[in-house]
Amino acid sequence: MKLIVKLLLTALAVVILSKLLPGVTVASYLTAIMVAIVLALLNVLVRPLLVFFTLPATILTLGLFLFVINACIILLADNIISGFSVASFWTALWFSILLTILESIFYGLVGKD
Image: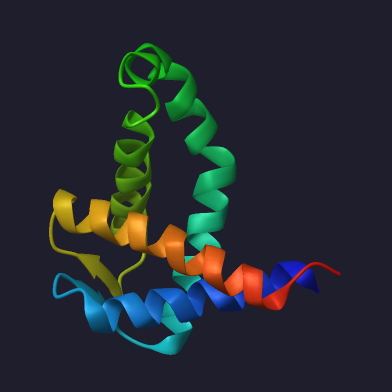
């Protein structure tokens, strides 16, 4: 149940950010839910591999390269889902930063069970 709530909150954050950021478009609420599911799967399956292979760059930049990895994950989701589009890498970078902030706020409001 907690996973479903987190996915729905992430979908809500995606919809809000698509209204705020000019380079991000989401076709419908169902597409936003699909974006949340795909982002969760990519964060579980692809992100650890990217972090492993870019570990020297991550260490050299004191962890700031993780923002680049998050933007790449967003761009991968853009390629997978047809109703979701991100205009550029920099838009994906801002989208990932703001998505993380909104998710933290929403998860904090829901609380721990």
